[in-house]
Length: 175
Image: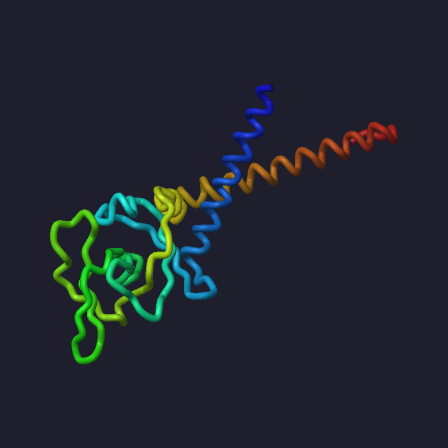
């Protein structure tokens, strides 16, 4: 009975590691269809989007009041912001978006041009961003990718040695 529990735990942990590895890969490399996977690093959109969530973002042809959009620079040192569209103005026949975090008391002072928008937030997965960000660091990468891979390789080597011993035992030869 206890071996079944350990087997289930093993598969749950393995599935989690695979999910984090896939999200890590997806967050680094572009996905077809212009989808982007990003991590939320502030609590300005709580409870709708919690700190540490992973958000899936896709550009849209138009945005409306109430949409949660991701905008701003995106680099290793700067993260874009995800806020809800609070109001839309038209300046020089172009839409200008006024955004606001759900927790914030007032709208953002910066007006957002359409060219600054990364995309509309399609959905979020709470807290998974912590694991993805950890996996991007060298120690996290080692623990989440390399260590499980080494365990799998070691397990396969044990199985091969066991099969070779079994075969040699059946044929009567020594290893």
